[in-house]
Every structure is written in structure tokens, then in C-alpha cells.
Amino acid sequence: MKKNIIGILAITLLLGSCAPKSDMVTVSGTWERRGANEIALYAIASGRLEKMADSQLQDDKKFTFAFTPEKEGYYVIGTGMPSQRLGKYVFYFKPGDQLNLTVNDTSYTLTGKNTKENKAMAAWHDHILPLEKGLVINPTYTYVNFFPLLEEKAKEYKAAKTGNKAFDRSFDQFRKFDLMHCALTFLMTPRSAQPEGADFPDYYRNIKVEELTANTGILTYPYDFLVTASYVENRLKGQPMKRPLELLEIVKNDTIKGELVLQALTVVKEYPVLEEITGKYGQYILTEDQQKRLQKATVRIVEVHNASGAGKPAINFTYKDVNGKTVSLSDFKGKVVYVDVWATWCGPCKKELPYLKELEKKFHGNKNIVFIGIGADELKDFQKWKDFVVKEQLPGVQVYGRTAGNDDICKLYQIKAFPRFMLFDKKGNIASVDAPRPSSKEIEPLLKKLLQ
Image (cartoon, rainbow, N blue to C red; front, top):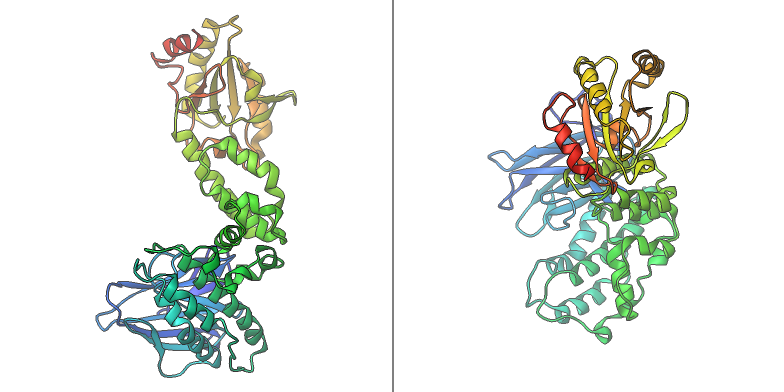
């Protein structure tokens, strides 16, 4: 059994399933379209797709899925990148449902036993399919062809009632978002002719980001189109495109604001920028899912930042010494800083201590260099670290760098083994996040060079 990242569903493949048969959703299909080797099943999580499982196509082009949903809702089956609409189809599942389908060269058809909800989904898909075909990159297919078709499909659509009140309510909203995503996606694909302001039908003029974000409904749709919607709205007003963080003043719902903050972080490569953004907008990271994704973003940015090497601003840290005094790396800007990250249980760390003490003596009295030791024992061993520092009379500034948050020294600098020595120049920039050890022949000349 396999769980997806946000814990929405318990996933099981048909083979080896231990869930009660009555609760299992079963999917059986044939994928006749060329170019596919495996078919993926996705959950919808905050306006994006998260893969739950995949099924390798057999020689007969058949694929199967079985899973137990915690709650009923929309899911996606298909191929290609998660952010791409083409090659994917949306269905609605509740415990015990069956889906049987065949995917052909251009669309899909339901076969065998299927639910009323997915028959309604298939009818809507057939209705919007002519628009979806226009999303394929084809420079000669322009707004002249697409806009009249959009106006026709945007007319009132009467969906058959299924008797499932939850689905019937959500399906009205789903169709609104699906049509809008199709209309906006068309504008973002290359064409030989682009529409001017007067060419746009009223459908586009009625798209309002403020209205779209009054609640979290847009996050139930599988593809993110909020920034694109903002682009079109501002384009028709003759205004420049707004970036995700610039949309925060327009967006009504705080959870959606959190999504925009996380979207802004996807292009961040420097830790100080991360600190600035989370310092200003961190209050919008509200859900458990958002908090987990912020942690992942932090790890990525730290790795990229540190990997960029010498000359990049150091990631600042603030910890307490054995006397409870707060010490920050930034306190020593203007000095060369040599950092030793160590633990009391680490044999190689202890072997470096005599060399570290000797090195510190060689530079003793030089006010332009500081030696910092950062204890990396587990939180439960804080007192053990403190006693060791006092007993061994360790030189320089000694602080304790483990925390329960993202400011933990091992997270900030992606430290997975001890000891780790780091070196920062007088400007507060990274000289090396994996500097030579005190026992090496390289470290003393390197310190002297940085002091020049």
C-alpha cells in the first residue's frame, strides 16, 4: 500500500489489495493512443496534480488501478507532465465506484459499467472537446477560429442531474473552471496571429481574479490558471502582468495567498530572498500541506544557494552559547569566520580538537578572525554538549545549533556528516561550506589569504 504525499488517499494496486472490496474504486481501461508506455493516476491537491500510482501498459494496451478514497471527489488519469492538460482526463470517484473506458486517438469513450457521475463527466468532455483540440500547438489555428467556438460552448450548459447532491453542486463549479482553463490556455500557445483588445469576446472580460479567489474553490480544479487569469485581466485593462506576490493584494482568500507565496518560491535560488519572502508573507502558509511544501522549498533553496559557492551571501544563523547569550553569524561581519560543526559522539570531531586549538592559538589576538564551534548533538543531548564544552575548555565562540525548525544548522547548510568546517569572508560571503579541516596543510594559508 502506498500513500500520496498529502495523505488524501490510501492507494493499492489491484494485486495484493487488502481493502474491503466494497470500498475499492476500480479502473479498467484500454489506451489505444500511440506513444504511451504507462498511465498515471493523480489526486488533485491545492490546484495541482500529485501522482498516486502508475500502470504499465500491457501488450494488449490495457491498464488497471484500484484504490480506496478517504472521500469522494475528482481524480485525473492520463499521460504527460502533471502540469499539462492534454492527454489527461478527469473523473469523479466515491468508494465502490467502477470506471471502464477506452482511450482512442482523440478522446475517450466509456465502456461497460460506469457511474452516473462519470457519464456526466464524459458528456461534458464531449461538449468541450472541440475547444480542447484547439489547444494543440498549431500556428495556423488562431483566435479567429477559436473565439467563435468558445462563445458557443460558453452558452448555458444543462447537465443531467445524477442524484448525487455533492457531485451536482461541485460539477457546476468544475465546468466553469474547466472552460476557463481551456480559454486561457489557448491564449498562451504560439499562434501566427494574436488578438488585440477589441478582438476578445466578453467571456474574457468577465474573468475577475478577485471573484475567482473569494473562496478555495479554484484549488479543487486540477490545473493552476490563476496567474494566467490575472495576465488576461490586466492585458484587457492595458496594465502590465502581475507576478504571484503582486497578486496578494487582490486575492481574497488567505489559503490561496499561501499558494501564490509557494509559487513565487519556485524560482528563488538565494536564501536571503527566501527569508525576505517568508518574513513578509509567511503568515499565509496555513495548511499542513503548504507547510510541508515550504520545508521542501527551503531545502532546495539552501542546496542551490550553498552549491553556488564562494562569493554568495552566507545564510545567517542565530544560536545561544553555553551562558545563554545569543550569537549570530552576522555579528562578525568584517571578520573572517571559521566554523566547526561537531558532535560529542563524533570520533573524527574529537580528533580535530587538538589541531583546532593549535590553529586558534596561531591567530590569537587577531581581531579580524573568529572561530565558532556549533554543537550538533540531538536536542535531548543539549546538556551533554554543554558539559563537554566546559570540560574541554573549547576555544572561540561555542554555540548550540540544533533546533526543531528550519533554522537548524544541519538544515541550513545541508550537513549530513560531522565534522563539517565552513569558512566565511569579511564581507559575510561564503568562502567555502566544506572548508579544509584544522589538521590539513591548506587551512592556515587559506585563513591568512582571507585576512589580507
